Image (cartoon, rainbow, N blue to C red):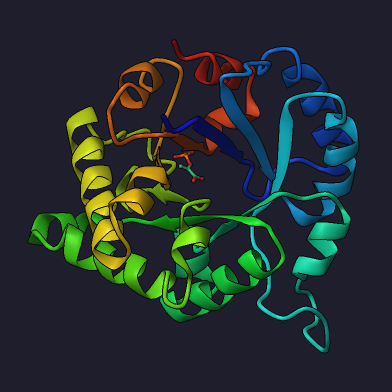
Length: 248
Ligand code: PEP
């Protein structure tokens, strides 16, 4: 049985003091031991959020990370910094980073390898555009993202990874994929992992759905056999996130 993992992606929201206030508001609302709860927050909020979350079930994740340990990479944040700050997860390859910051499958792969090297759990995002869905190439595109993203990752490492299936057309648009659409793609991503590795790895890896998840849509989505939780943007900044974490 895979434990559900429900992660909030705060994107570029919340100043450090707002962040601490939000953690204090959400802490009692997201206290569900049956679910891994992760707050993925802007770099400047990582330390205050980790501090505010101490003693709760909230784990903290970064929204990005560079693929070198240190050096002349102005503006980047390294895995060593994340580990030292007690950060357990990192979102990699979010579609906004791919679209606005030239993230590619190859850089995502380098970051995946680095994250595993330092014991940070990657939440690797993949997902098609509306045009790709209409052209019928959704899985061709996603298979490429997954296959390149996991290049050089061992089966043992892959078993601990999280993949977030996020159709681009559903992110921040209020348009959630139907439960059936989300389940189908998550099932096919699991089959792709089985092809790369084996059945045991496919069975262990956790696959989230993301894209305008809210308290109304979460119960049905998370009840699907291949959907192991969600990556939640807008709704993770509101008390509603507590309802999503307690979706049952
Ligand atoms: C996201 O940021 O990954 C996301 C899915 O956002 P939203 O829930 O707002 O669509």
